[in-house]
Length: 290
Image 1 (cartoon, rainbow, N blue to C red):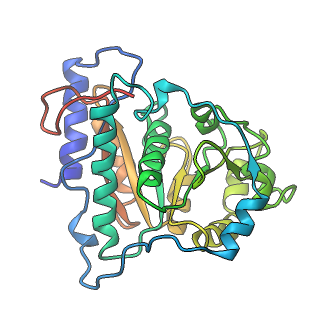
Image 2: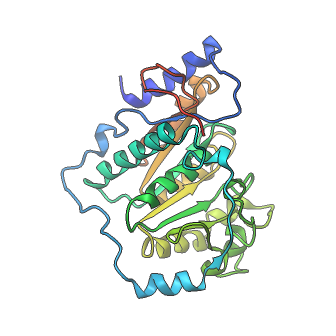
């Protein structure tokens, strides 16, 4: 049985047993092995190199919008002293898994999704990005592509607009919607102004061009996308990303729904499952809160 299948099954079992504690915190646990065999390519590519002075990046950074972010401690395992030791370590483990995959294939743009809303994908995106930027000289960009329910700006205490929708509608350039906040190499493109046609915007050429441009400037791009089952956007966006992380909330996510949703990415660089809100002492390790 694959680790991905085990993670989905574990979430379903917790749900059936009613093990959800009801806490308002999120719990995230990375599987021991998040690489399906199909991703174990023979060719070995170099890890992202340490950042050197890049005139293109420095110019882009100079033109970006600087905001004084105020992170919500409940949404960051790196700020809450009660959970920092365990929580941050779990995200470092997830970071290490991604670097292991990057040893054998190109991995720069990672999409994070789930089967249904409220499974913690935005929480995973925010903390994974903070973990990645803590590795020396890494440039990390977060993009909120969940245009129907954007929330990354709330976790960072950032402004919602101008953002991705404003860029996709041609009303702003990339640097005008990219915010630099608390750390010099962590950047955010928030969701932007509310729109009535998010699917059409996400699938137009400007989205593809944005990702291609940002891949040339950043070491990692983390894309927060809508849940899979309500809309088809994530399945199509996956074609523009190097890999997909699928978030499952233990004690909540229906196994059949999760299996159906994750199945859409098995031919689209599915990296693995992040089990959210796991119970202490289970097969995936200790609980931690964020």
